[in-house]
Amino acid sequence: MNQLNFYKFDGAGNDFILIDIRHSDLQLSQQHIANICHRRFGVGADGLMTLGLADGYDFEMRYYNSDGYLGSMCGNGGRCITAFAHMLSIKPQQPNCYHFVGYDGPHEGEILEWDPIQRKGIVRLAMKDIAVENVHRCLDGWFLDTGSPHYVQWVDDLEHYDVVGEGRRLRYLDSVFPEGTNVDFIEKRSDGTLFVRTYERGVEDETWACGTGVTACALVSGCKQLATRGGSFNVTFQSLGSTFSHVRLIGPVSCNFEGYWSLNHKLPFSKE
Image (cartoon, rainbow, N blue to C red; front, side):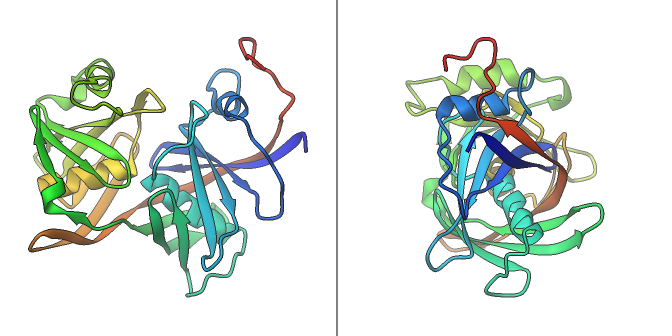
């Protein structure tokens, strides 16, 4: 199989390449994925996902960062792949509600709105419960895992903040984060919404939005209306005793285009 059929999605500007592998023996190497995600010589994306079969679930989600390596859970990716399953006419166990398994276990993605002509809508994703004791004070902020590890810090004048420079420094602070971390900077706006900017490990750059990051920022701040450079989110949750439960990430999803990619295509600097 040398020609790959793919779909390009975004969740508030956080963009992904999606591939249906339910009836395929497709084997993608790390270099294949890095090549197709490259923003100059490839399709360009923050990550790539495959939708496959999984016993007891509507589908399996496997997420790869743009560097080609298998990643942890991706919140916007989970919302996009839910819309992808809907577009593929996969019949869920419950109407408009898909049960799938990802890196961190089972998830539930629900189509709240969908325009089949414009191929965009609103998707709600159930995130995992978080024990309050696992939200740690760290450096000048907080560290927690919402399916992916996140360090969250309040800053001033976030619009002009050096997110890439400072995010990269913190992401590689091995003495504190030996396995690396995503880095989120937050600032409260005058309208009460929380403005979030995120440096993502694996992408090694700022992304326009990050689902697990937005979720982490909501839990740390208590704010449920959040804004990113790519769009707005609503994060709902309950804080009962020692646990953040019923955590839901709600935001926009769009399918931008469909295309084909040759696996024989080599980038000028490719090692393959």
